[in-house]
Image 1 (tube, one colour):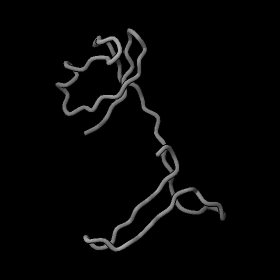
Image 2 (cartoon, rainbow, N blue to C red):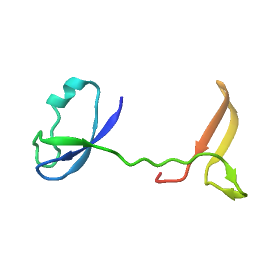
Image 3 (cartoon, rainbow, N blue to C red):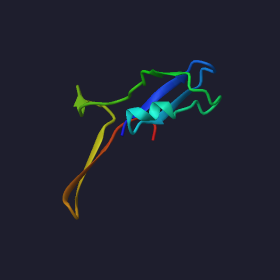
Amino acid sequence: MPIYEFRCRDCNEVFELLQLGASQDDEAKCPTCGKQNFERVLSVTNHAVGGKSGGASSGVSKQERTCSQGECTTWTVPGTS
């Protein structure tokens, strides 16, 4: 279920909507002004890749452990938590 970001063309409010299907566009409204005049905007992404490069840490850490399903891995990446 993707979450999309929209900008209201009337009040410029930027908000997110969980889109379960294309028919939901008819029901969606701006949470600030209540109008249906909005456009989808490109969301900013944040990601980190890899481990160490040139001896410097990328901020990504990996924790492996045994759990009830077998072996589990938890990845911690830098950013807002």
